[in-house]
Amino acid sequence: MIIIEKIGPQTLSLDLRDQVSAADIQAVDDAVRDLLEEEGKINLLLDLTGISDVSAGAVAEDLKVETALLPHLRRFGRMAAVTEKQWIASVMRAAGHLMPGLEFQTFAPDDRLAARTFVLDEGAAPETAVPAVRFLDPPHPHVLAYEIDGVIQQADADAVIERLNTMLAETPGAGRRISLLVRVTNFAGFAPSMMISGPLWTAKLAAIRNLHRYALVGGGGWMESLAKLADPVTSVEMKSFDAEEEADARLWVSEGLDPDAG
Image (cartoon, rainbow, N blue to C red):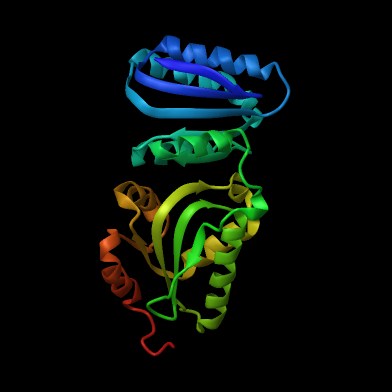
C-alpha cells in the first residue's frame, strides 16, 4: 500500500508500506497528474522503509506510468528518498540523476525530518551549504586524496578539478600518472547541474587518460559494483576497501608511482 499526503504546495509525501500493488501506482499517478494541472515544480518525499514487496502488476503499472510522464520530467523539482538499504538508495540516486533539473537526495530513517525539510525547500540556502568534499593528506605526491560526506555540489567538483589540474601540471612527462584515493563517509548524491558541466567532463577525461589506480574506501559493495561499470571503457585499476582497511588502500594506490616524487 501507499499512503499519499499533500504536505505543501506542489509537494507529495508517498509512504510505501508492505506490498505495493498496481492500484497503488495508479493512485500515485492520479495524485501527480492533479499537481500537473497547477503551476510550479512538483516535489516528492518517498518513504521506503516500510516496503516489503512489489507485485508484478505494480511493476508493469509503474513502467506504464513513468513512460506517460516522460514529457513532464522537467516539472519535477525536488525528490527525497528515505531508506536504510544502501542498494535501494544507489538505484534511486541513479534514476534521479537521469531526470533533468531534479534535485535528489537520500536520507536515513532517522533523518525523516531533514528529508521533509529538503523537499519543502526550507533548508539552508545553497551558498551556506557545507562542502561535501574534504581533501586528505595524500600517501604520495601523485595521489589526489579526498573524503566525500554529503551531496556533491558544483563548488565541490570545482575544488577537485582545480587540485586535479594542478597535480597534472606538476607531474611531468607524457607518461605521467596519478592515482585517486576516495574515502566515502556519506555519499548522498550530486547536484543535477553537474551532469552537463563541460569543465567537469573535461577533467574526467584527463583523469582517465592519466589515472593509474583508484582506491575507494568505505563505499561498500554497492558502490564498488557501480565503479566497475567503467571497466569496459578504461584500463584504470579500481579496488574497494573497507573503512578499517584505509592503510592498505594508501599503500596500494601508491604502488607504481614515481618513487622519487616529493
